[in-house]
Amino acid sequence: MNEQAFGIDLHIHTTSSDGTRTVAETMQDASYWGLKHIAVTDHNQFALTEPVCFHGLEVIPGAEFSTAYRTETGRLVEIHVIGLFFDGVPENIHAIFKKIPMQRKQYLDAIITKLNHLGISISYEELCNVFPDSNQIGRRHVAEILVKKQYADSITDAFDRLIGNRSPYWVDSTKYMKYMSLEKCVRTICENGGFPILAHPYHYHCTADEVLKLVRDFKSFTNDYPAGIEVYYSKYDEIRRRELLSIAEKFQLYPSAASDRHAQKDKFERGEEILLENMKNACKSWNIKE
Image (cartoon, rainbow, N blue to C red; front, side, top):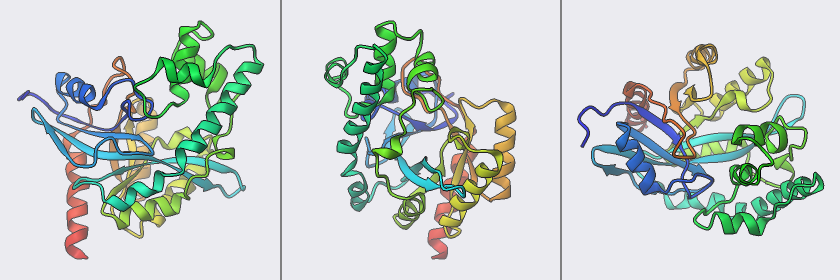
């Protein structure tokens, strides 16, 4: 046990989705870097269903739920929600993800077809061969192949120019992935004893007013059940973090710390432990009240 361990990181991916480190390797990495608490939150599935203690490191089971949300202008947006389950994942939650694998394959085929039309040689079979240990091939894997085959200089470059949400060749996932509504997702997490956290609020091509509306709606869907928002997010600078902290205070949401880590080279976030304590205490107080 690292007696100097401190800090939390509540948004991490493994090979159970589109990360490159297994759950065991991720725990080893977090322990090596002296984290005290982490959450494993793979896309639309649970790599862990029960809390784990690894050499003094607390590992919380969770998932990053993809949801559908319609803005006031009628635009359908894919919104992500982190669901943490401090006491373990109820069995009925797993049914939410049953139809997603087939839809994801159709979505990836559309991305690959668009890349092929650009003269980029890549196939789904190639992705599966290169990443045999991944349970969920995704865009990051596509980006890694693009870098490996020198179609892009880096993962960031691959997303910016070819496959990311701001790329001119972006493929809208909502045309292929039929996710549950944001409202239903939040309510389901709350009803099953989980803790919902709105992930990376500035990632959805929303205006400032749309972000506020999104957060307001997210909060309303909880029916005052405790919930959070990612404030200390690895890709957000101090200005963004201060803005989000103000938003969290306005809507009475608990600030979370998140790296969105996918690879060994990605740094962990190291949020203050009081943030996690506040979340857990809020859940306990709610359950006692109920």
